[in-house]
Image 1 (cartoon, rainbow, N blue to C red):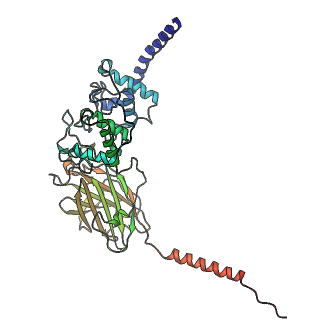
Image 2 (cartoon, rainbow, N blue to C red; image 1 turned 90 degrees about the horizontal axis):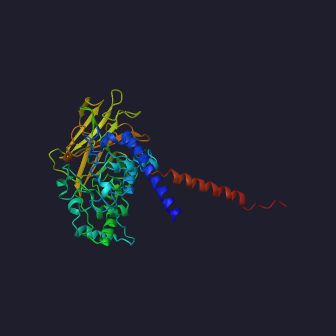
Image 3 (cartoon, rainbow, N blue to C red; image 1 turned 120 degrees about the vertical axis):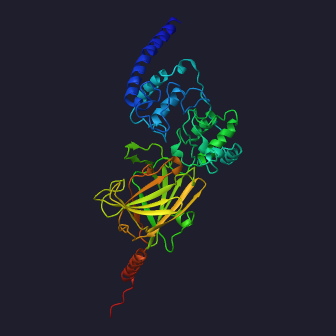
Length: 467
């Protein structure tokens, strides 16, 4: 008994001595990496916080977004560590797992908890995740019956009829989650994490807890249905090529034509543009990715652009999109309308059927030219579909056998985006797939005939010699 008490006292002493050391290390890490957004006091008012959306969390309140605990409760240590490691996709909060070690993240968690007095007095309980199988079909019924579509839309693209009226509890606008883009989920698109969000809600947002409204099995089925709506991969390549597939005959003008679905789709991430005057980064673009497909038939080329837009057409500021090409062979021009030595050609579409073509040698050096392209546009179920088409030789640099630099940009008028306030891609490459050729068939046939003749010569019976 004495030995056991002695061991307990030693362990308690070790823990007591270790806690201040962990907290001091955590404080040092916080001052090095976190104060720029969250502020020196942890109140979310750091020098970089202005203009961020959403604003950095007030850590003093302890009102964390991602938790495995019931609504209103504090997160577990594991929850905080996971958020630090993985970040919050779709927000300025980055992932730190490649910068901070597991031990450093643990020390940082110790310090973060010291910022809020709530951690000293409030209890935390973890929610239990069901082990039973989930039903996507039943989850879809629950989605309808619970009217989830009012915020998240019929197809789950965040375009519900009340989504534009939502706000954080401190007044900032809030956008319902687009379930088709799982990589933007602030927690994770994994089913168990979706279940936790449904069960415990998201503190500070219109997404409340459904723990007391739906049974465990209902929430588990609903999580499976939400996960099934994910259309986009959780990772993308940095080496983008938009390959225009060859097709005989006219190019389709309907976005849902089978010919488009048979092409190779490129999923292109977009980021907020850097605005020159005043110099600032646009932190809150609505459009964070666009899917691109391309076709050509020997004479004409078409590009199908598709992206999610929960607010749709009809805003005071019209939506718009542009394709930007390098105007001459060579390297990639400066991304913002080219430069003095490397001009670009821009195809610009604006809601309402307006099309413009620009030739630019840099921002502020833009000349308007007659449009050499056409656009067919439609918006359906929270998604824009645009087909840009043109003759292959109409002002574009040679594309056959060449890789031409291509850049994409989208503006959402309902989000106040106009001018250079836009979402933009990096430079991509586009090229033409060669038409199908009969030469391989002829080469194969010639090879087969040659082999047959050679075999006949080798194995043919020889005549008898004269007697």
